[in-house]
Each structure stands twice: as C-alpha cells, then as structure tokens.
Length: 118
Image 1: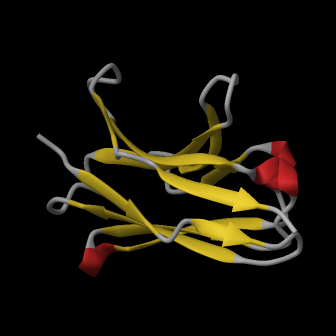
Image 2: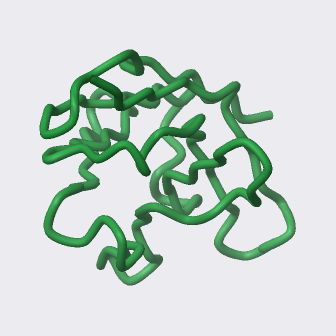
Image 3: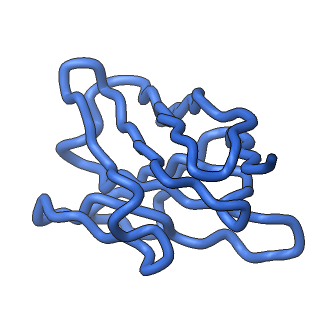
C-alpha cells in the first residue's frame, strides 16, 4: 500500500508562485511513475506534470514554461514548482503514483487546494 501526502497549497495572487510537495511512504520511485494532476469544479481530473519510466517529464500544454516537476529520492518526495500562476490554475492538485508494470495499480493523495485570485 502506497501512501501519498500532499502539502503546499494555498491562496496566491495572479503572477505568484507556490511549491507543492508530495511525500511518499517508502522508496517507490524506482517502481512507480510519479505525477501531478488537478481537478477544478465541474471538470475532469487532468494531468499537469509527470515523470515517465524513461526518466523524462511530460507537461500539460497549459503549464509548460511555468511549472516544473522535480523529486528528491532521498526524501521520497516529489515537488511541483508553480510560477506565474493564473486564475485558471485554480484547482485541487493531486499527487499520483502508477505502477510501471501493473498500470492499473495507481494511488492518489488526498489533494491540496490551490486558489489563484486577487
């Protein structure tokens, strides 16, 4: 059982920055692909950024150049640095871990609210 705990959300003005953290229970980065998703009210949960099994990164077009996903293997933590935030970035952000072999085996954190508003 993988547990993921997000933190770092909050209220920020347009143009501001936030860094989200996702602490995983144990050393899972070698067997799970890690990513961040977000869900706004009335919308589906969409991919924001993720590491691939090849070690590269994927970003949604809407966040390219503004968001950066990174990880600290020693701390079993994945980060999402969000810069130049826009009101349309407002959503609940979820951390995700997907097994590289059994792709249907996936875990989610509880989510952290990000609100971009003046």
